[in-house]
Image (cartoon, rainbow, N blue to C red; front, side, top):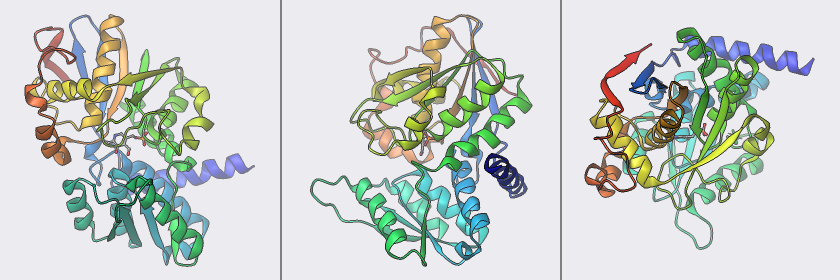
Length: 336
Ligand SMILES: Cc1ncc(COP(=O)(O)O)c(C=O)c1O
């Protein structure tokens, strides 16, 4: 009964999501010489510029459907990245208030994007022992507890609507363009929402091997985390049954992936897209003729200064991909 009610609610949110112009991002296919194919959704075509439009829309709309008073409340979130931009953008579109709390080290491009949304932006102060993103998250949670009549918090790391947004949108969109026969689904974990939602969707329909990528500890890759170091990972732990393998990626290899996507294929990818691509490519090489699905969560737009700081355009060969290993076919990118 509860399951049926949740399903009906998710279908209602799904209809609203498409009616308001979210999703339906392009699916591209990159062909390799050994017959393998990497399929990737270009998620920066969402209105907030990232994959996080999906989770933000589902999490916010669920709150509106569950309690009418939430329309008058402020949606408050502590975050240093795309989730903040997405929440602020969805709230603006739906005509509700948002407050985004960010740590002082947040990239200037992200801060600019947040300002453009017109959200009430709060930048925290640095403090000992508590990482600043954690402090921002805690502040948002405390506000929603102490002033529950004024504030709503979405808690993306434990909110099932996060992975359901991919189950109800990203998965069906892929099936519309492609028969869905793929060997591997490979996506890096932040909250885990995208890998879990798509893993669940495809496990029910096709026999994919689901690979969750984690970042090395102390990684610079925005949005993705190291499994052991990640503090709040309720969503992932609750859904580990759909993950078959775990794979680690270094910043250096992810940077090599970004460089290859931009310079060889002209795909203007963000840092975590480079991580997803480089691991997908490794599987593609090891399993000739395989079909691999991944997502490119955001574009290079916010990372240009970070890319220069890390000097990714002139990385030496070791540890990165090598352009001359020409199993790359630069003319073999297709939009499906
Ligand atoms: C750029 C980027 N890549 C990857 C992810 C990870 O996505 P998920 O939270 O669905 O695991 C995020 C999440 O915020 C992100 O912003």
